[in-house]
Image (cartoon, rainbow, N blue to C red; front, side, top):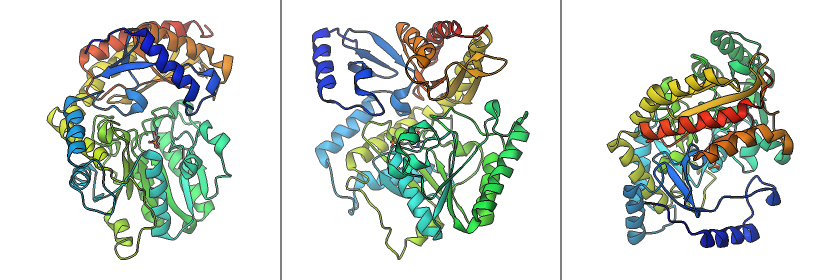
Length: 452
Ligand code: PMP
């Protein structure tokens, strides 16, 4: 579909938005949301007809791009057949979605509890862990994001928690590995892994193992910076959980369903958690859906004792039909393999090449279609291009980077001093190269804010 300019319609959409939509995470008068006229594949466009290559996949959820015809058709077909039905019934779209998800999740994560998104999945996973163990506390990592609802935001280890923090009762935070800004002053991946595991073991010992229900980790932390854990780390956490009877929750809301070049990021390691949370890519975000994949042992806890939790729209038929179609498309079109191939042959090498030429790039890290560029003022000192949790003018260098990217037709993902390269998993080689060329221009704008 070619974008048709219609600035008048765009102005009306924008005016109604400004008058009545209260936007998330925003100071309402300091934002200027783009009015979006349409989207297809890896692109979207505004009412002036300007097209953007979407290197954000929305909020990292359009894993098969926008408006995939087979998924759109499946949603239409389901709407014609059965638009909605209450959760306590067995419904074809729901049971088929659960079957397909269970088939793809690792190990014996064979029972699926459906939610409407990631935060609800995290809330329910930690509730299950507490009821299963009879213990009160959850350990979660700094530099993490687990969702915006009351319990999920308290588990989150980034500044979005600060204004919402209810004292984080029952949450104890620890440092997960991140060699580039090592909390453990490590110099090698192996050191970082060993020290992070020792730190976690010490945290467990001093908290009292018998008080800890769960450890929750993003398999590869997403919003907080796409820090691929060093080899052996997740295995080590699994071993600690086994040793102390702690439930291991892996949050795959962002990393799951192809983003890392495998169905789940955990598949890179062979580690099987006791609970796995998912959302976003499960149906490319076409209709809200999330859930928890549950191990046999935890499912057994609730075999003859009710699970005290549920949601009106749990496993909504439209969302589940979209999931069935998405998972089938991913299989038929080799989308997971495509993400792995593009990461290995285009994005990885392309981003590393950009890093060599642009002094603002401190580090490139990632896998599949899940990459972060850490932007710095000074490569030697690693001083970030903007401070932690930048406000107002302090964010000017990243704003300049973003404006330059958009001027070159690229919609970038920006969080603090990082840009994340997180396009759809089925992005083509030509599109990925087009995005890298625009990124090259945008990084030149960031370079102007470096110290040397
Ligand atoms: N966990 C992770 C790892 C996420 O990235 C997100 C969303 N970015 C969430 C949980 C929360 O998901 P939602 O916004 O759908 O509630």
